[in-house]
Picture 1 (cartoon, rainbow, N blue to C red):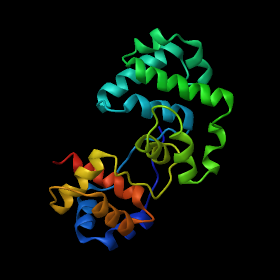
Picture 2 (cartoon, one colour; picture 1 turned 135 degrees about the horizontal axis):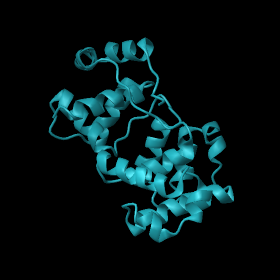
Picture 3 (cartoon, rainbow, N blue to C red; picture 1 turned 45 degrees about the vertical axis):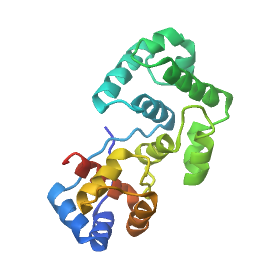
Length: 201
């Protein structure tokens, strides 16, 4: 299994920016978060994970793999919508997945060369598809393309982690941007720790 790679450079930078985060990093230690290097199956995985628990998403992904084998555009388009839906997805979510597969097969999105685009270009391209919002695109940037400076305001757990660390009851977009600027250019590693802190609430 592949994991998001980071080391002393990122950790020491984040610790230098905030004493509270520094203490949390020392307490939590290094974090292993798995990644999916191939961007097409990673995006399908992100769509499946939308608005359901990690455990439920894992079950649905396993069923889909058992149904079609390798998660590829061709295999998705060769399966019936009903069979895909029977893996535990809503009709709407199935339509999103099929839409991504069609975009890949037509060449509208060149998943093999997605890594050559900037973060903003990738987000703009992906969010032009039905069912792909900014959060889903940002998760792809982290968990497939391993971009180093991503933190998502649309991720409730990240916001909860920040609020937990700093003792906040609310977190506005404006306040969030202060933290984004503080921890740049290593916001992705900061995100890993905020996710961990959210679990401690």
